[in-house]
Length: 265
Image (cartoon, rainbow, N blue to C red; front, side, top):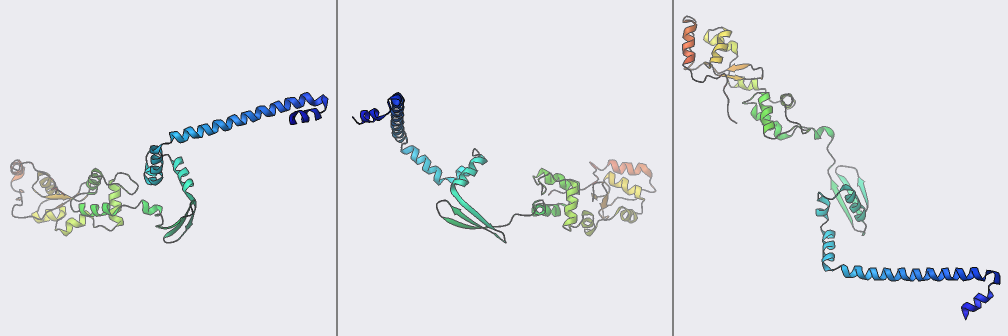
């Protein structure tokens, strides 16, 4: 009766329009009612599908944040979202050390102290382990040999590059390591001129004797240049008056002659 009463009050010329508007209104009300019913039905279905196992897995994710954060399959964009979900704001106070105030969305707060980042030069600095190895190996090897050994053993420069002879030289100079030449001299080794004088021979003869293995010599650089062990009871004789043939006979009598003594590390 109410509907008919309102309908009769409408101007006769507009009753058709009013009827259409009312019909459209009723259709929209039915659509809204259907949508609400569908929404409630879907919520019910979702709750039914959300069993205890799903709840357990979601709670595990919430309590296992570090594993999820560090997982290789977690992209950086997801890590940023995780941070935004957890943190309200972060305040950094520059100093020694750096102070970090963290405020979580739930209201909890935490204060951290961090060491300041290393400057660029410190990041490129040669590690103490490399310096120590160079110092130790200089007793036995030249700089090129040291570079090869360190690279083979997996050592790298401060920038991650393989170690080369130039780097070994810079490490030696920068850290004041005793050069190999001086180390050998401190052990009593002689220069070529000194060994030649001790035998009363020419420098050229000393070179020949070294190549023949008659003199024990140690390279002190990569040219190579040598220092010589002092003569002992087994030192070779001077063949000045015996001629080259005598030297050749003694040379053939020495098996596997070498020009340098190597020591294992």
